[in-house]
Every structure is written in structure tokens, then in C-alpha cells.
Image (cartoon, rainbow, N blue to C red; front, side, top):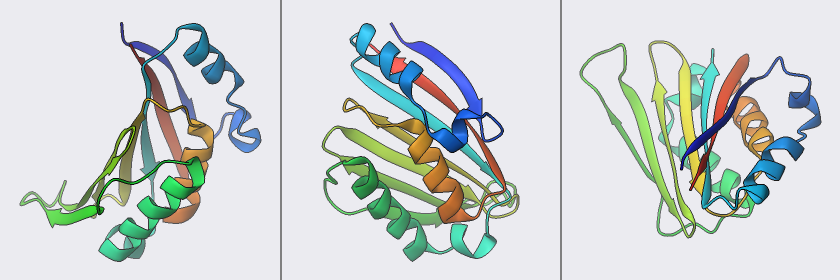
Length: 146
């Protein structure tokens, strides 16, 4: 059964320590099939979130950081007729599942999602994404997949 572990944000004291003990403990104790993390990044650098090469570089560097093996090329496309939601979207298959994301030009927000049956530290991912895209803050939700 899928279980939401919790919602976290950059104001949480654990953000700077990157302590994933509680998340890792639940992942191991429940013998989860995978971990899914959905991140909301706010007030990003507009040049970075609208640059396809930067989004691809983010994906490649993220995979290296968390030890995920990419399967094929990163796909980055720009689409959306509604200005409120238009922007780049990415899909990167990884051997243990996938990384996706959408980048909203009008609001300066970014929404990367990481799903993998190999464990990774979601705090590391969120902090890396914040730094890469120049976000002022973030929030994320972790879900155990069974």
C-alpha cells in the first residue's frame, strides 16, 4: 500500500543537516518497493528554468549525485498554450524508474519528481534542486510505494 511519509520544507531544521534517518528507517522497515519525492521549488531563476540545456544538465548531475543510472537521453520539451502553465517539461528514464519535471515560466516555479526503487536521500535532492535553479525555498512530499 502506498503511504505518504510526510511533507517537508526548506524551513525545517533537517534541511540543512540533510538527515534522512526517519525516511530511510520507514523505507527499510516497510520493505518499500520504491520512494517517490515531489518537490515544489519557488521563485527560481527564470533563465535557468527556461533553458533546455540547463534542465538537461540538472538531470544528469542529479543522477550522478544520487547514484542513479540514466537509461537513454533526457527529453526536454517546451509546451503549453496556457501562459499560466507553459514551460519546459523533462523525462529521464533511470534503471530504477524515472525522473520527471515541469518548469512554469510565468510563476518561476519548478516541479521535479523522482521515483526510484533504489533508495536516495530526498533532502539531498531538494537542496541540490534549490541551489541549481536558484529557488528561494521549497517544499516536498515523500511517498513510499509498495
